[in-house]
Length: 88
Image 1 (tube, rainbow, N blue to C red):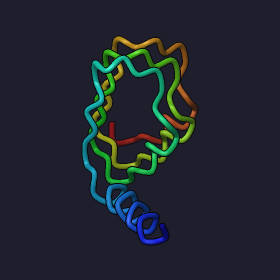
Image 2 (spheres, helix red, strand yellow):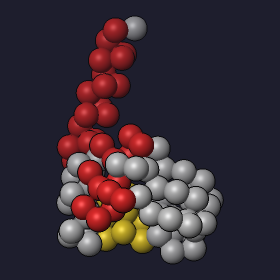
Image 3 (cartoon, rainbow, N blue to C red):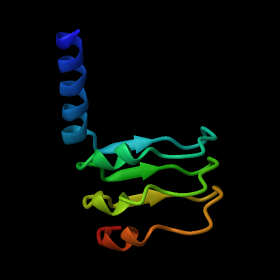
């Protein structure tokens, strides 16, 4: 059990250090988990065509984000931290 858990933690860490793009568009998802904002290398996030009502409060932690597509969702407000995304 420890080995499996250790492997999972390693994979999650590796992804957080290497994933540069996330394409989760047109999936009718209603939320992005807070842990999504641990993808520190993320430069592109396509989340359009879903049912998102809000974004994670810590979305501003995605400092490398250059492209963010959120059209056709149910967003009524954006988190304050989105102002930290100066590369958009």
